[in-house]
Image (tube, rainbow, N blue to C red; front, side, top):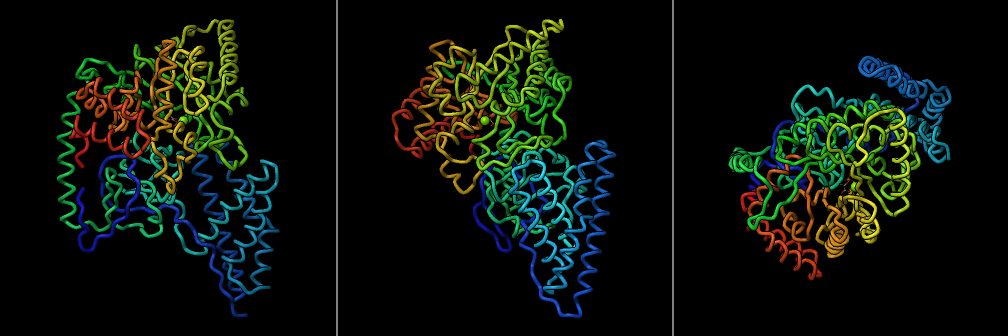
Length: 590
Ligand code: PEP
Ligand code: MG
């Protein structure tokens, strides 16, 4: 990485989450708003301020109607009707009259008056134990932001699907659903103030091959739309106003990348086999069925994790069985005879279903998530199970349950699966009765009872993203504690080893599908610990294969033995890095 800061440049540092370098104009999304400023008016200004508020409400109404019209045109009436609630807020006589009263009585500016009154109502509604009313609180806040934008002359929220020119997106935060909307032709890369390496936003960036940085602290406040910058997703650096010297240095990095990519292209069609002839199964993680083609081209031997949540978010109603069947069938047929592991929907945490009023939770990652959600929303779950079963007739489909904590969840899920099989049999709809069932090992409890789970499933997939978060009690989304999120913590190393041993004692296959699997520094450790399969975003598969073909299993096992006996996470991490770098230095030249 070019180290020196050149004159006129400004640097922002964060956590690199998706490799690559890009440069272009910055587009800052939704800067975190300061509370509306208060200004005391002179008597002469008061009526003018009331008129200013009325005008802003009128403009906002027109703006919402325009957005509604576009949504109805492009998506449909039902989706457009969600804006009716926003229009009702803008026309609410109590709210509007109270804001005007406040301007007149306290002689305060329109921004302050409207936001105070609106927030008063929103806060009261947000506390009520009723999903419908709580949603109205969100509507009020949404509309208030629009009215304030009008009054303060801020730009409206950018439509991420229709950007007009290529840009680097900078935002305080990007939800997975917003990230999924990014127009890949127009977005060169992105950076966010918050987030961490295993947040789903970061995971999506890797799948989309978009250079990305998270944890940039207050970059979204400091950077401005139109600034010219270079974003280095290898090292987590944004350089604003890069000099010719910096651009030249990055040009050299780009050339090294081209050389590396040539080397990587060579291994794509070759097997992932170590120098001492140990075969590792490499597969890919996908977020949508259309990525099946990309998987084939990546050198992966199948899909190790199909995150089906993305079929469910950014829409009003859950997908039908038929729609899901088409998606799963497409993946199964495209990859046939290679396996496709379809994970039942892992909603909750940072991935929310817009159509369902999910109560706000204090700890969403410890809440109504994944299998817990599915065992409660059985209609949604059964439609998915039927769709997966039907797709199993068309290729090598395997089904996997997320966030299993105990045997009971597995038993209940399998009972529903058995019912779905009975229904399909009765309806004479074909499916593979021997479809393999697997459990994700992503909670410490699952890892500890891996021996019991191994009696009941055909495979495990270790979800290290969650396993690390739950074992170390470190929120995977929180950049402030990112330094505590340690894949090489002895507790993690030992839980992985215990899971592998419990599984192998019963001939159960073990994959790792968390981000740890795609990080070259950890590949030798995982192989040394005895993992059978590694699954990562398609662009990471070739580097993983390149590395595996340059290492020896015997030495990876020594590394794992060292890790099992070492008490220091940084020491284990350093040894892993050294090992991988010695085997494949080209992967680490940045
Ligand atoms: C994991 O937790 O490691 C995993 C693969 O699942 P997700 O990242 O979707 O939670
Ligand atoms: Mg997980």
